Image (cartoon, rainbow, N blue to C red; front, top):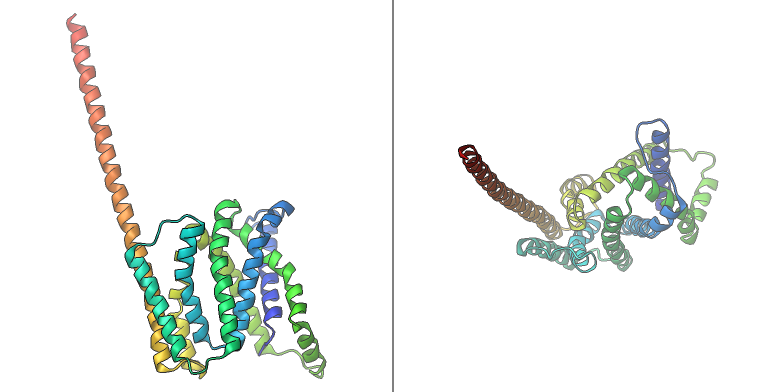
Length: 312
């Protein structure tokens, strides 16, 4: 329908960047103004983000959706390790680590049962795995330390990515494919179905960009990564129902195992969070009790002094 991933992502970046700027001018939102020094600091993160999207689209171009989901499911384990090593985050609990190993086991099982193994597809998959892991950890570092608001991150990320798009468009030779297709279309180059699909992808890209950065600011890099994995159940169901290009039954079982591991991770983190909250509440109550006892003791002491002074 629209076999030009570089042009598609450029249109999505353009929609998001212009959308934030226009809505900001109209007063519907506030975003940080464009400052060259800030853009220079954010450029490495935007570059990694662009590479992640670039490898993502090329992976989907050469492999089925199931292969993409499996490699996407591998990222939480790698992000958890990178988070611990590079961002000095606490090591995962035993249950959390077990859930990540379940994800890994399902992914390995899928690869072993993939009858449609394609070296080109798996090369893109490995490239995607490396870039998305780096992107998850590095952008979490940026949103923690750069000081922009959420709309500011959306604006900078998409604007800088848009500036990089022509470089990859030319380097991959996609521009030649676009001009060739346009020249051979005999004047009938507009396709309403393709237009609607591209327009919807741009709108969803804009929304995903905002909620993605909002989530990155609120939760850890590993939790954000697993959230992206756990929402793939619906994707798998739709892919099986409407397309014939998907994995075998054993492959689908392995794929579901990776998703179950993602859900187990969510439960383990939620449980730890509730425990931490309860533990913090208990400490707070104990502290309040100590303060209350001290205050009562002070009041009794003041009363004794008052009675002694009155007797004198």
